[in-house]
Length: 181
Image (cartoon, rainbow, N blue to C red; front, side, top):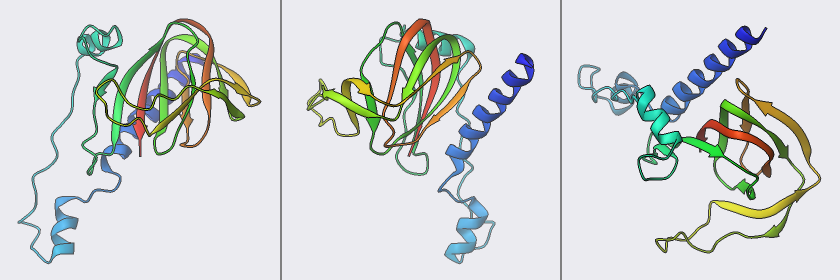
């Protein structure tokens, strides 16, 4: 059962990445057909995006000296980001206006509270670089909502607008987070 669940979770994660990369974009033949050009005059195929196991593990450990972003969106045909997220303790509750979080848990566990209402707003006004902080609302906690224990192999899809909060973190708690628009 555990092996079947892990395989299913891997398939869901791979399908999600594939769909996120193709959603809203056209193939060269479709673009040519819609523009009136012949299929032989098509745009080049998109390039593969690959990260080795070592790069992924270094990113989880934040050895790159950067944030948890493994791949940042171009906000064109690829309107998603891939993050190697981690929690070592309970942090802020949050909700996203635009992004849907698609999580695949790879290490540790936590309690995930979803729904309810954000309490005690702590949303920053700007990022450290001065850019307005607008996509995510943050709070100290959630009142109400539904709790569930999540662990290695689980896949969770948190639609935009749904408050969520990781508590009772048993870590390190690592998860891939595909943020899709």
